[in-house]
Length: 197
View 1 (cartoon, one colour):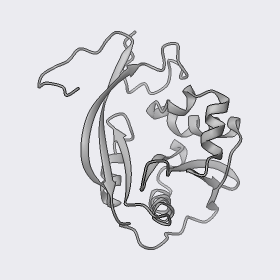
View 2 (cartoon, rainbow, N blue to C red):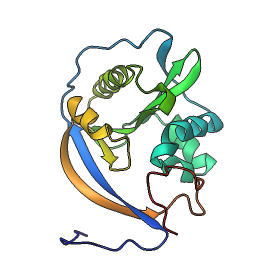
View 3 (spheres, rainbow, N blue to C red):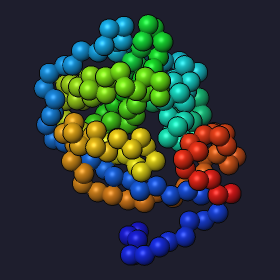
């Protein structure tokens, strides 16, 4: 459904996000970028609890919800699939960032999840993480690499993706039940997003 111009009411207990879809057809970052001292990236198959813990640590400020709604078997199937690459960014052994690639679309790769815990921002991790993501995505035979972000993400996210070589190609409005109302996040999550029960 395409929205008409004008204001549209959001149902009670729901929230709306403006989503921007971006893509690239060739890597824009051709060389690896080193991580700062004491920080490295490893491809890992995390157990369910460790994955959810990292997903929450990185995504709760932005209301990341998708993986939290899956039961254990469904999430384990994704994480163990040959179509999924999960890269964990670690500082002195502690997980502080996530780069997750999804190769299930035909001839494409989605940057499914990309982010770091808030305390890790400002340490120069974004560039090395994106260089890693592009290298791994285009190491397979794909025609495009795509990602989406929304107005609830870190305010720097959209500009970061564009500087990294992604180009916007579509926008949408997503309306869904607020995950802080009887959902996987508590009421104190993402206070910058109004919760209207």
